[in-house]
Image 1 (tube, rainbow, N blue to C red):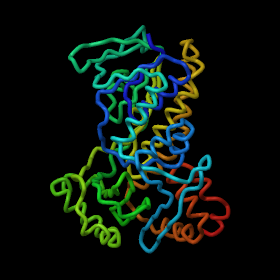
Image 2 (image 1 turned 30 degrees about the vertical axis):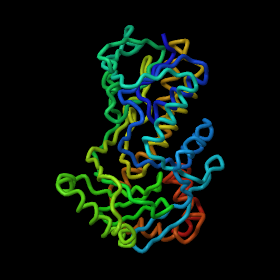
Image 3 (image 1 turned 45 degrees about the vertical axis):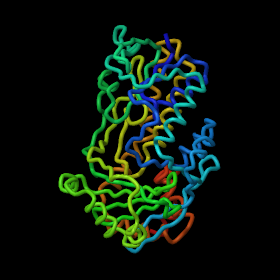
Image 4 (image 1 turned 135 degrees about the horizontal axis):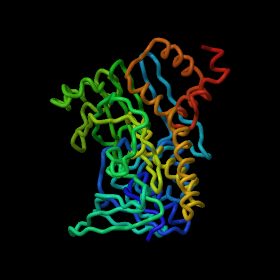
Length: 392
């Protein structure tokens, strides 16, 4: 019997497994994929996520993949140009954006180094129960076999379309329809900045990564069926009209990979815990990728679950109390960012927002606090401090 079973071994599951294994617990981590394997992602790790990587002792290995430090951000809309960097988090102002086929193995290896057992290519198809309590999982293996394993706590970290969440019948607490569709590809490195360019109905971003720059374009979800019929043309047109200056930098460049995209950016909170089980990362909460918060928020949830449950695993009643506490704290941690992301994903540029942005752009400390809100380092209340409100 294990103390913890983690279903999913990427940005939420691997840190969860690592933390519990480091605390001396017997941990099993399973994933249907075999690593290394790429996945759709904006790649970006904001400053709070970087601070956690350092705290976990994993940052140096992430940096060693060759992803460049990103310590400058740009936001351009209408006549406004803001350039700066988030305020520090535990002394870090630098962000990173490693490719997922490099990042995910680093995180999984850290879990294994901590003592977790990792079984790849295994698909969970059922949960085991004792009364109303989840006590394990059944999964298939690459050789066609089936195995059952039990644990005091089973954690679902298997992504937005979480099979585990379905198996435990985790109810959806809050839900909004998809708001944007997105397409991206990679070009040879042409910027060292995290750039955000906005126009009515369009949003374009650049993310410096390993030996390349990711360039993404966002469109209203209502246009998805039209755009998908000729995504390449729509993508290039979005770049050209949203930021002619950015388009000029890549117009002559050949994409390094095929264009990738999605029209299934779900927005929801699921109930994150119940008797003997918990959800972390996209399995419990997903929002539009336009603010690139997924990896950072996955890290924060893994740490939060560990902090609340680490000393209460052995007593089922105490564990249930811990899981209820985790559920409340998770919502407190992520609800504001969820609704802020939905606001950005509307792809609107209202006049009153432009007026506020012009004031923010006029002072570097305001600008850095603004980028801090995007990173999750500064709350909206902290951004709109008395000194800023006095100028609006």
